[in-house]
Amino acid sequence: MFYKFIFILMIIIIITIAMIDIDARPPNRMKIPNGMVFGCQTCHIKPTGGAPWNQFGLDFKANDQKWDLTLGKKDSDGDGWTNAEELGDPECMWREGMPDPAPENGVFNPGDATSHPEPSPANSSSWGSLKTLVF
Ligand code: HEC
Ligand SMILES: [Ca+2]
Image 1 (cartoon, rainbow, N blue to C red):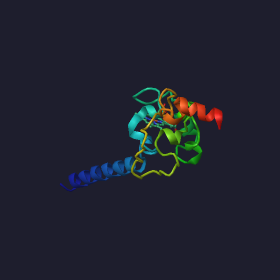
Image 2: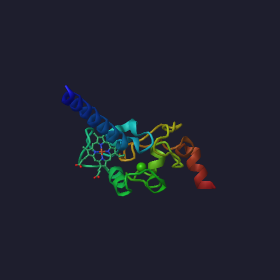
Image 3: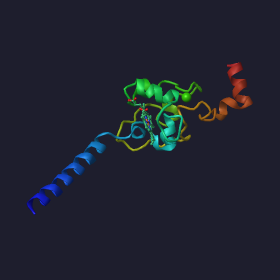
């Protein structure tokens, strides 16, 4: 009877430690703003994760797996929009644990050059192009 009690107690302790351990390491998608929007494919090529990574994933890894100004000011996929602009945190104010920023123009994948905000209407219209020519 006593040994059975000890056994159950140990099981409980082991489960508790395992749960604390999982909590201590937040998944990578929680380490970037709006990380749930594209999920694993924000950083991984495959929707199921693992190798290989896209360029944002590689840059994230090279940056000690943290979101900061260095990573945010980069344009990992080379589409002309910084990672911070694409993830809806243009000023890189977001830090781990904070609620996701709500961007006005949507969230785009910083690791996919085909996913980016529309050019602003003022610049793409003929008046916009004329303005840049004239002034
Ligand atoms: C913010 C970027 C990011 C997101 C989002 C992300 N990962 Fe990762 N993941 C990484 C990085 C960077 C590594 C490499 C870590 C290392 O080498 O130390 C990695 C490693 C892994 C590995 C180990 C692969 C290996 O060969 O070592 C798996 C499996 C994995 N991720 C699955 C996932 C899954 C599943 C998701 C979505 C639920 C996900 N990841 C979301 C960045 C990310
Ligand atoms: Ca980009």
